[in-house]
Amino acid sequence: MAKWGEGDPRWIVEERADATNVNNWHWTERDATNWSSDKLKSLLLGLNVENEEGTCEVTEVSKVEGEASINNRKGKLIFFYEWNLKATWTGKSKTGVNYKGTIEVPNLSDENDMEDLDISVSLNKDEPDTPLTSLMKTKGAEKIREALGSYVGFLKTVVFLAEFTQGMILPTANGVAKLQSSSQSKAKVDRTQISSSGGSSAPISTGVKIPTCKFSMRETFLTSPPELYRVFLNQEMVQAFTHGPATVDGERGGKFRLLEGNVFGEFTELIPDEKIVMKWRYNTWPCEHYATITLSFLDRSSETELKVECRGVPDSEEEQTREGWKRYYFGAIKQTFGFGARLF
Image (cartoon, rainbow, N blue to C red):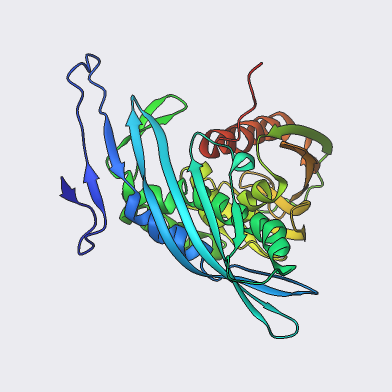
């Protein structure tokens, strides 16, 4: 056992070798329990909902029991987590009466989908009945579900991976590759930010009008529209599925740059959980030429259909753009966050 991270006793690294490992694969395990406990508390504490009856807030997280880890098996990362949570909620009616109750989540686990999560909300026995209990059981439970979904997303993001998987052998399209250390990743981000602010690396404008095309693609993801929407706007999550540094300002007018600076642009319209419109381009396209990419998030009950409409793509780049989105967006997002299609 060895401490992980200089000066921080929470990070514990555990490496195990399998004596039957005849192919000489490097198998390792990283303990993510303490990090997860802190993250779960921070996501739940202060969570609040309100309606015409009053307001409710999570004021204490009294129990966080369980464990979490990242396992590397034959070049593949496997995320394990299992938690039993208990919290206190307090409510205040419009007339100023205070109430208190409990929240229990016994089965937050990698084996259960977020839709199957048990969230039990109750009012303390010595409290009089109040409509605020119903508020916590509906809107409150939904917010708790979203917060716990965020924990799972954060567990798999590059900020966490850069710390916990340093030295692990990770899968790539052509085999396996070693993940960069956090210091290497930070240096690469810094270089990317510098190059994005300067104009020396931009292609020279030819002043020639080029023929363009439009096309659309559809893909299904096993997650909710809000979760998938957040994947495209959260910098840490973008870095996770692209496996590298990125800059993402997830607001209208915000800029983004990813895939080692090969893709960049600007968000021009954002409708939360429903639509993202962006100016988008490859670095090799003629200077200042952008395509317009529209992402529509369609709720299909237990899954989300993503419709991608591309306008203004150079004719000569249509196939490359299609394949790029399928590989570096659709496939990478499914693999990273477990949003893959069901097998029938």
